Length: 171
Image 1 (cartoon, rainbow, N blue to C red):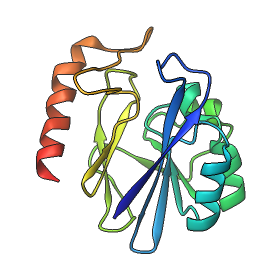
Image 2: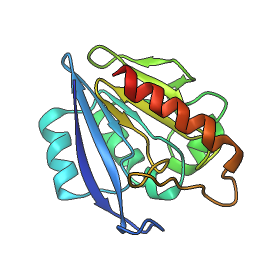
Image 3: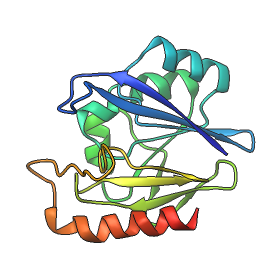
Image 4: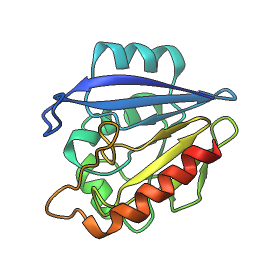
């Protein structure tokens, strides 16, 4: 299984002025994560590899901007966090086909596991794909975390960071 990262310039509070999108490929299937906006590089990658599944780490605007376009163009199965279907639809303009919770496996390669990682946002999740942990805005650089206002949960961060360390040690 392999994850390809594409930096997507988008209006964001991130110091880089970009959000990372990922295309995970394995076993003939693919998962597109956090398509913040359309870019030539992301469009080329999607055209070359296809998209079977589509999900986001959380529903902030700088992560969901191209969900509707890629869902429509690829026919991908769209996933969202269980219990957040209405918020997901409102943020993306797309009704999800499937939902996930902690421990759900998205059927790509040997499986992409969903890890519950609130802190930056209440609906934040990470995806464990082989040796890669796709954690959205939870960690923006080594030694840093982002707790987003107004819904960020500072109290969740020690547990979440511990969960990420366990995930990193297990892959």
